[in-house]
Amino acid sequence: MAAADRPVPVVLSIAGSDSGGGAGIQADLKAFAAAGVHGATAITALTAQSTVGVSAVEVVSPAMVEAQVDAVAGDLGVDAVKIGMLGDVATIEAVARALDRLPPGTPVVHDPVMVAESGARLLPQAATTALIQHVLPRATVITPNLPEARALIGERVTGAEDLDGEALACALHALGPAVVVVTGGHRDEVTDLVFDGVRLDELAGERHPDGAAHGSGCTHSATLAAHLALGSTPLEAARAARAASGAAVRDGLRGLGAGAGPVDVLGLTLASEVRTKTRRATPPSGARPLP
Image (cartoon, rainbow, N blue to C red; front, top):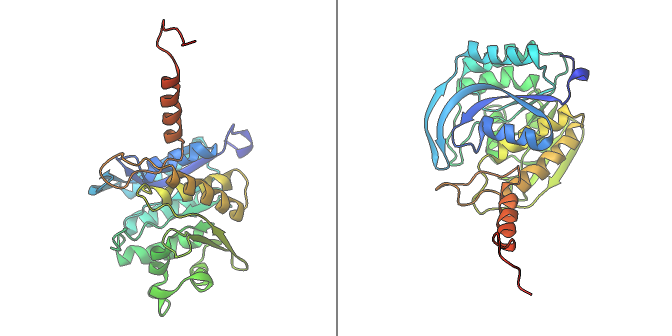
């Protein structure tokens, strides 16, 4: 189906599944809906996951990953792609092949899931090398956080572990993406850096440190991809993503689960508060209001 014939844009998420619903494919679909686009998926891995951690991972075969992408592209069409968790070299190579079969110019946003909150590396070195070789040059925008950004350039730049600001953005841009967005959650100033090879923009935000940020990176990158599909420039899309992910953390589902609560990009917290206030304000059936 041609883009002009689709009632709404279609954005494809190529990522892992989070059984707890906070991150991964599940977070992407919620962010797509909130942004006003239709979300489709190609699942790269299944995780047994909750708010307290991941207990098991099962990788989907590379052939099945490609088949999912081809099925969506052949019927619904694809206006933009968001790529998340890619756990091994075979999956990365499969995704690169699938991307090359999409129409030229299809926007691709990659959130490189590489470093855990604990600082542990989630992606083996061979897979990191494959990511740099096969995915980053095909990306319209990459959205690493600060540890992921440093990990991507770690073996190419001396002192990468201390790099930040324009120097970091330039080093990432040299790896091939058209635009780099270093998200601000791990930076001192909570500021996203947006660099297109010529101009560096800083997008300021607020820090919300009280434990409901699970899925914030997925929400950011999915929202950015959705806005590219809607026709925004990368900088406009990055602004929208910064605002949406910040609000989703601010309104996050604290107390849902024993660990870090999921972000709330759909306004569930506000809707619950409204329902509670409505119930309190509505007299029981048959009751007469006080004079």
